[in-house]
Amino acid sequence: MTRERAAADVVFSLFPREAFKTLRVHESAPGRRGLSLWLWYNSKQKVFSGYYPSKPFGSMVEHIRNEDLEAQTFPDRTFDLVIHLDVMEHLFHPFAALREIFRTLDFGGVCIFTTPTYPEWAASEQVAFRSKDGIRIVGEPEYHGNPQDPSGSLVTWRYGYDFPLLIQRHTGFDVEVRRMQSNSIAVLGPMTEVYILRKPRTF
Image (cartoon, rainbow, N blue to C red; front, side):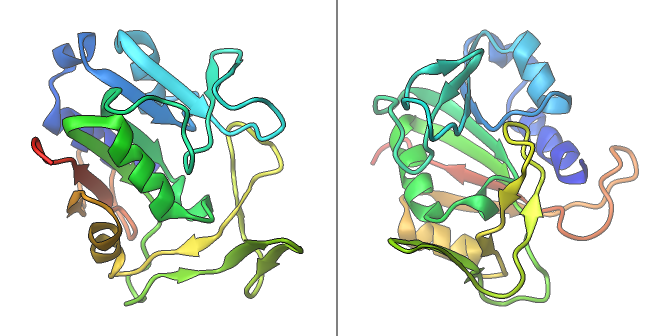
């Protein structure tokens, strides 16, 4: 929840609450609390998406649109803001997902996300791979909680100091990382990074 609070602080530092009456927002893997709940009640043009591979992509599963972040069904330039919290470490092809987010953002659009970033690691490392023979895991498998799947989500990447550079190299985004320690909003300890990706206004 610490990164979630940090992300909410960043969101509202960039966008006044009144802006959510008109902002076109996509949140991937929304939770049932905090920022996701606020968006549910206050964002007038929002789409929540989740990953349900057994169902057709682009269809609705209750109030959640079924989307593969690495191959989205949205048209180009659909959104002004894309949010996802602790999703990137579970994707097999995270840079494909970020390129899709770049495509679906309008010019000047922003993607805000969190993911565990290991302070002791200079280089990011993929630790799970999908192949024709199944999934190959490097080391001990690690799973995190998943609001759409009670069995959890496999960790596929561990990101290090080089992650912002990798994003910039693989996408057209300008990249900013905010790291905070704040008693006032209870953001304390390690791994509090929030990533802010901006699509240039002209491209």
